[in-house]
Image (cartoon, rainbow over all chains, first blue to last red):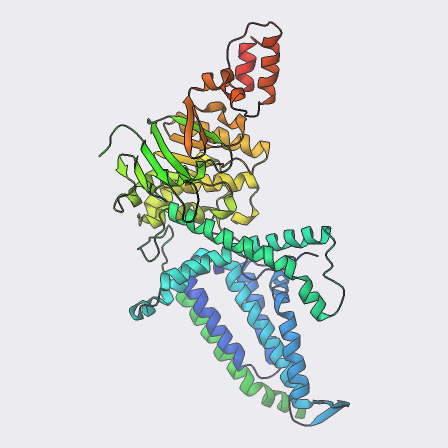
Length: 278
Length: 273
């Protein structure tokens, strides 16, 4: 039983690919542009184009396509839940029925689209996180949200919190694994019984984990203070952000791709019909 | 301004809220530039509190602490003290802020709002000193325990401090990691870095130029390593390093040998081997 197996959202893979070299602000904006495009996809066939886009992202980032595919695993439960919900609760032309549960044609298509949309969404977010170090990600986010500072929103503090949260993801999973193993070695059983019993069996894991997290947070705050960190004080960066022509190009490619996908969504069914008639 | 001393602590008392006894109960300590003080003592003797006082994380409730000639109770002096006196803690996991090695080393200089070139220069030097240059683009979570502690040290060194305070920095390391960290500290001390090393491990005091012992918030013994290893450590009930036990046994069996530190090379030299 190992929690950290296959968990890759938020885990940066150092590299020097085209995507790695982009300004984090560009990567964040491009990801949002692609996600907006993804939400416009309404047909299962549209995802052929989005899979191609993901393959291009994989090549440009030199992150294995299989790693990107695996990154959706942590939300698989959510994907299945979304699929089931849409499959059985979408009204329309009935094609199958088991008792009170019925599957409609519209439900089948919607379940497929929603499931894929969610999974692709996570995969695109994973490409962003795999190619952007937590520090540059939070730097990028801080700069993008900097206008909010006018409204007294603590942008830099929020960015620092995000850096720390991302930095501690692998550590916390390792700690959870350690506590789980310690409890298993003392006879704890996490794998038998009903849902409620299983949930209850995790209390001996959660309690020490919370204690550990609070202790660690306090120690980290002291260590940061000793390293001259003052919340809200001006800081400089070893690698200041700089937007270059390649960032503009990457953004234009993303916009072009989303426009293409929109055209594909609009005209693909008509083209398919024409081809069928021909 | 207090001059010529890296630390000048006079009658320092510190009490934590709700505690029945003060953590520090009248500490007097003078530390000259380039000194390496090993601070020994049982749990709860006030060693870590003293470390925090040295770095201005805490200010004495009574008495005074001058670090680099600056008064730690003066809020204007606190940033300068933290810059000049770096602190390395016991658990490296608790002090690594960033996910990438070089980014973590840069954290301190970035807080000083230095120019990117200056930060890069400091990061390069700190990584070089700690032997982590090859690992600069690695994820900090992928490092071994010893490498993580060297990263914590690099993060402290990037502030380019004049003094280092190590709060049991070797206690979570395996013998190899400890030896590598000690070698690094030895090199820093050779270059003139003043050090206060808090430790439970007797072997770690091998290179100290002075040893102080704390008990119940007080410094109860402060002297030279030769006096300490000459017998004081036994009187105070400290563990005896194996090599030193063997050396003492040889002396008790009639071999006329000088006092020595618990360092294998020194013992071999004393034995003319």
